Image 1 (cartoon, rainbow, N blue to C red):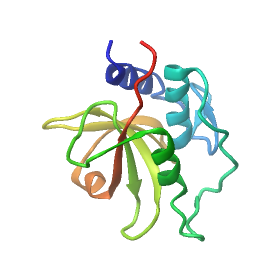
Image 2 (cartoon, one colour):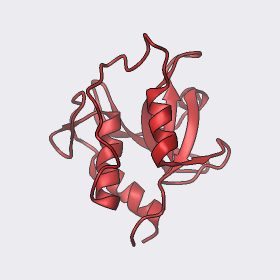
Image 3 (tube, rainbow, N blue to C red):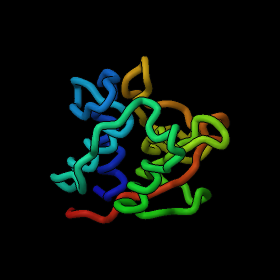
Image 4 (spheres, rainbow, N blue to C red):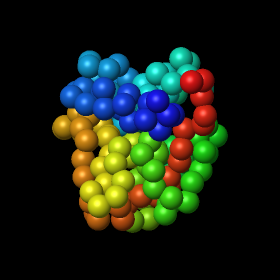
Length: 147
């Protein structure tokens, strides 16, 4: 199984996990960052850094791109146009705001999809519709890991 297939497979294993801010426990509770952390652990066993406590508004008051900075430290940056299954997508929920939501692209092509943890819904696989596509701020791949 390729790295991208492993990423998508693991992300889909989290579907149905309830939404719980700051959590990262498959089946018990997670938020969008917790989903990414859980997929990372499945690939690499240990998380690359300790995640400090964070509020639901992330770094909006300071306008600091905390999530983007961490993604640039640990993931491989990609052009937005180079969509592939297994990509990590960072979203700006409002134009001009910081990136504070993320998901994992599960399908490309005519009907693109992504897996994400969404407040009030938990982890689900959603259509990467035009409204979601317009919010993509950055695209990353996981680094190559052990096979």
